[in-house]
Image (cartoon, rainbow over all chains, first blue to last red; front, top):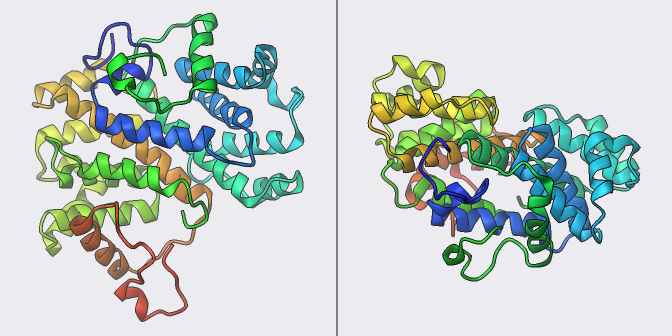
Length: 187
Length: 183
């Protein structure tokens, strides 16, 4: 049972979101802009950053749901997402994304860990300042979302297969949908 | 934020809802939670802005600023309510990481009169400042050091909130230092 009273059966973030509609609207609009808004980083790359930070924070719900969304953006390549999570350095992703994941990992550790060498390396791999900015902000935002989900000790399915449908909705429909408050559907 | 035209709006909307929206915690109490988490994260800019805003919500006297400084140093020794102390203990656990908050911390806050919604909001405010602090510090932003600048920011924020403000308008305290620009 979560630390506070939330609707039974609502997985992860959807529990606390259900009891706080005003903050939920702002959180959903933020994640929509960060992960699906117009950007030179693809939606898959941004979901991978979210998934990676969530796995470093050991947040089961966020890493499985955003991992599923990333895989769905890539045509259902769940194996690649697993390899990125296990060791992104050896996974078949671009050098640019690897350097951005290194930055995201530093942000996950705290507010003072990213060095100018980290930023330089990302620039050398072709990352723009805007992409570095967005990586820092996505990583920082998932330090928030992960704390919201796990800090309140929410109920979370542990079977990755339970997240496939959620990942499809996240990838294809997004995070801000009409009437989501009323339906209580998965994000 | 100037650099990224599409992200300031959702970020400002979020902080507006969290710190000024209709709520049983007062704006001063919510700003205290933001200040305390930012000081635990050692984010100079956030703890100074939100500390000043909290002090302004309390009236803006020197004693109010001293109370906020005391909360950052050791909130247990200050004159704030025991409910507020229990909520700051929760915020401090959230700052450390996502798995530190215990059922005991939550039960203690309830005993002190905190509602589930207040506990929810405390966790979310603390989590949000783990985001804002990282955003500010990991990008190695320039941060003013002059307390007068933060006093002015706090006064404006307490009066105007976070949305619909002209953030590019120069601060009076900055006018004396033309080589500095507001971030």
